[in-house]
Image 1 (cartoon, one colour):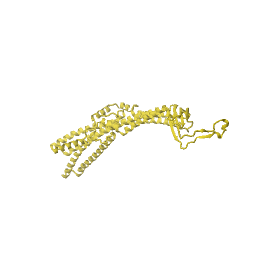
Image 2: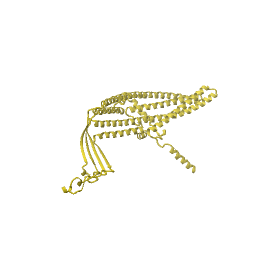
Image 3: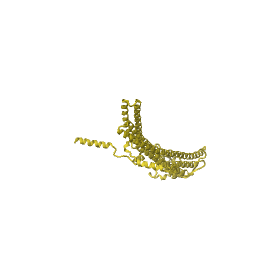
Image 4: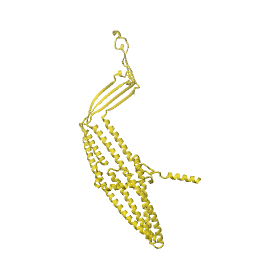
Length: 462
């Protein structure tokens, strides 16, 4: 009874160690969009750009400043009094000889209030252009966020596909290792029996070493792929067994893309509606608005504003202490202010030229980007065609090897064949399959890159 309990405990523990679910591409994409640092930073840039727009719109509203000071005077000026009898004969004028207060003295508390309001009236379009500028920057940040998400999704799709095929290559290499191990045994036996030269036997062992190197390289690629997928999705404990890949859906996307007319695909990739071209166009618009702002700041273009000031100073705290209004210590002024730069050594003119240069640079960047996209489309389309041709070739070669291996198997079964020849045929057949898988990794890169270039990079193939 006790052994049965132990068995159940071991089963429960083992079930906990085995992944109970696998992440679909859509689930990995959702995690990536929520946790990926680059995407999160792009979102924060959008938030900051939105706040900048609100700040720019605030330029239409008046600016109101309030300054309040309260001072305590430790040694205030004493009252000033005089004796009337010291200056006139009070008996002659019939007045009472008494002290007269000329100055009541300074109180210990002294308050100052200053309220100022500045309302722009005319600024040669500086405020409206500033709003336009920051709106354009906001829109550019939104496009950058969209492009960052598309690029991340493209990378995610490509890495999931590559991992899927690398894991299959790992399995094939394990099979190859078993075959090569048997070939080494046969070579050693043949060498001992004088049926094989030592150089030929050594060649088989070298082949085994080459396989060990290939396995180590693929293991490293899988490890790096898992690290990058963890960084990309924010799931640090991600394992290869937890990732699903729909190969049928990928193959369908591959076929549909290859059936697309190249001229149509190229036109779509080079369309001005593409996110990256919209972004570059927006940067050109930003440069044009910056030029307009610089043009409004040249010499002899005055800004006009209304300035209203209200001030109070006295020993009574307004609205709190009594008799504060009786002091008549307040004032108010209304001012129409005009401000312009008369001479700045040509700085404003150079700012206009600098902004104009920015416009030209943006147009050059757009042309350069289209040239790079055109090259990328050509390269990946060629890779697509070449990859499919390689798969056809390797598939045909695999079929030929299958027929050859069937013959070798029949000869081996009848006692006339060589086990080494049969195993070598199996190695060649598996090598064909490995080459097909490596080609499909390259095809995945080409497919997802072309989907990104034509504006479908955000699609999740799941």
